[in-house]
Structure formats: structure tokens, C-alpha cells
Length: 207
Image 1 (cartoon, helix red, strand yellow):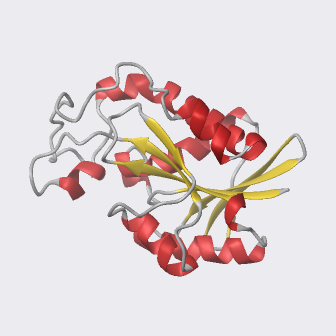
Image 2: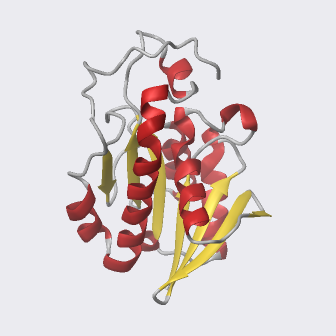
């Protein structure tokens, strides 16, 4: 069976280590662990790996976050992907850094990448793996926060976060969204901070 796993992020070195690129980082980690490499394709970079008879098409859109839906819609059509075969990996302000949440469908929650996908697909009935990035920003500084570099303490947690996210992706493909939710939605990495405890990493960090 064919699957499309989309990691959301922004292209360019200036965005590579930012919170908004957790989707890209997860797919990079999964590809590296699986010894596959990304190639430039239409609307993004793609790598393909096979696990127990399943084919995973890993897509990092090159359309920038706000136009993610353009890339997703193209590859959903080209690969003949059904809703249950699509998984989107996305950063989430509502979760503390280190937390993961798998969902079978849902609202975009104000996330521009998910909003674009909803608009292009005409539906929000697809699975998404949400990776917490915390919410340590001052009022009005949300954009600067998501485009800021991941902080030093969180960097220490990042390899385990990405490894756990990669395992959640494989579970989704092999066992379905329900089992992936049961296995990973209560799983945190390191000391998962509440929003109130999150360090107020400055919104003036580099974008």
C-alpha cells in the first residue's frame, strides 16, 4: 500500500533549525535512519522507503508553509492517495516541547500550513502528527516565536523527539491511526514543560 507522509516547514537555511520546521526535521531523521535520500521533485523534495510491504513517500514541500496545500494536493492526486493514507507532520504551539499527539482528523488550529492543505483538499479528514514546540512568547510575538531557533535545552531533547516521531509514523503506516494514537499520545520526551513553565525564549531570536 502507498502512503504519503508530509512534513511541514519552510525551505532555506535560515529556517532549517526553527520551531516551524519540526515537520521537515522529522522526515529528515526518518530518512537518515532508513538510509534513503531526498530528491528534488515537483513542489518539493521526496524520499521513498519501504516497510513490510508498505511504501512511504516522504514529502517536504518547497512551496513554503502558507502554500503547503499546493504540494500536498499535487502528490495526493499523482500517487492516488486516499485520506487514510495521508499523514501530515506539523509543529504545534498548544503542546509543550517534547509532547506528541496523533489525530485522525481535525481543525487547522490556526496553523497556516494545515489551513492551506484543508483548502486545497477541500477536507480536514486526514491524519496529522502534532509535535509540541511550546508557547514561551510574549503577547503578539507568536510569528517571531515559531520562526525562532529551537533553544539550547530543547536541542538536547530534539534527537529523542524526532526518533519518537519517526516511530509514530511507522506505527501509523503499519498499524493504523488508532493504534498510533494509543501508543504515542501519552508519550512525552524528557521533562515536558507546561505552557506556564516554558522558558520565555525571546521572540528576538534569529528567524
